[in-house]
Image (cartoon, rainbow, N blue to C red; front, top):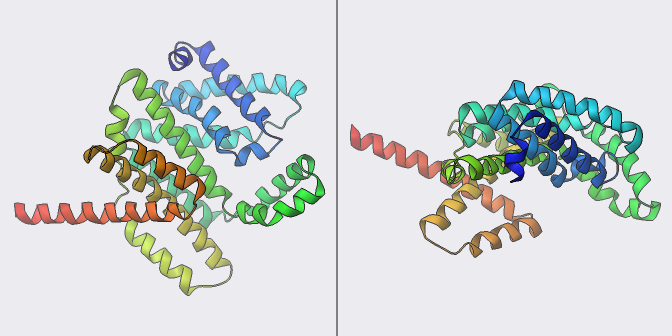
Length: 296
């Protein structure tokens, strides 16, 4: 019902984008909403759904009009709205990639490689994140709590570029599922099961692991950030492998619920699932190679 309403006309799309963005802005104190995955999921999924169904130029028009409305409302909500573009524009671009490629593996790979190129060319934005979040946390928390959360806060800012892209990918995949439910039941499952990180990425990943242990100083930090990007890419493929395996073996959906609960409360589980994604890549590579040998 909500999805069909959003896509039923321009006014509905503008109101949905504006309303979902306002919820994201007001959900948490200023700037802190940028580290909350639900902020990306709430407004990002709406932007992505409109892009996937209606196209880039249509969505750009809706975003421009929504931005004007937010500028008017800004006098009353007293929030900085410039940061909203950090969610809107990358999600618009990544959704356009999925719309044209029709491959979730291409989406994840290009998002990951784009983040890596960003790290190499522009560098780490942890200082920008730290400056913005420190001001927001100082306003939201008393001094004693601020000191308690400071170590977590400092370590988190170093990963925020990668986390933000990961949150965007989750929002886009949710929007793709949403679109599938409305117009192509079962289509998302087929796409998600077919998700593959190109095998050409694997040697770059191995090289990055080697460089993390062979260089030092600022370069080591950069390669560690790049390594985290690869881990998130293979994490998504690992989740695809898990869903595919549960379906193939006709297991209960409870296994997936347990998997996601472990992923939420045991961060190390993410590394195990990423390893499954790497194994899935190697297995597919081996099967294709063996198949080509049989044909010859």
